[in-house]
Length: 254
Image (cartoon, rainbow, N blue to C red):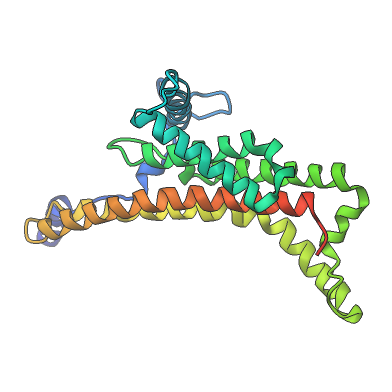
């Protein structure tokens, strides 16, 4: 009995934190199972992301001043960066798809940044969200490739610069790597966001221990700074990979 009591006392007084609970999906109203039509915390934070983007690009630039304010400057910098990225990677043929790519970039970067707020939720930490975006990119560029090039789009898988005997083997490799694109495209973003937030939660949990709390607070501060950088970099990587895939669809020849 004494041993059991001691174990229970130790369990109650011990440090307990669960870094993965922050990624759980909950209904916004009431409790119960989550269906496809149920408003959840993911729904809320995706809606807030859209509102934040609209506020920046519509309200922040409404004056169109010659000397821009800080909001107009941020909007213009984002617009110019993505526009140049699309033009440099895909050529001028790809500029007609700039609005779609700009939307992807803004949604990802705002989701990542808003997810760093206290008590916030990061939609891009879920493979269900990033998977839909990656699959949409995959289907879009594939359709564009066939519409623009017809059967010549299949030349993407036939490496003409390689020796003839190696071309069938390389074609199989190219086909496999092509269909793996949406998997790697989505997992990279979701995995990085989930890992960073989990590490922050772990360091925050150690702040309850007085002996290491100063180190824990310093680690959390450093991780927050790193997560801001990672959040932007992951949005940039997702966007530039989209541009690379679009370039392959527009110009499939090796």
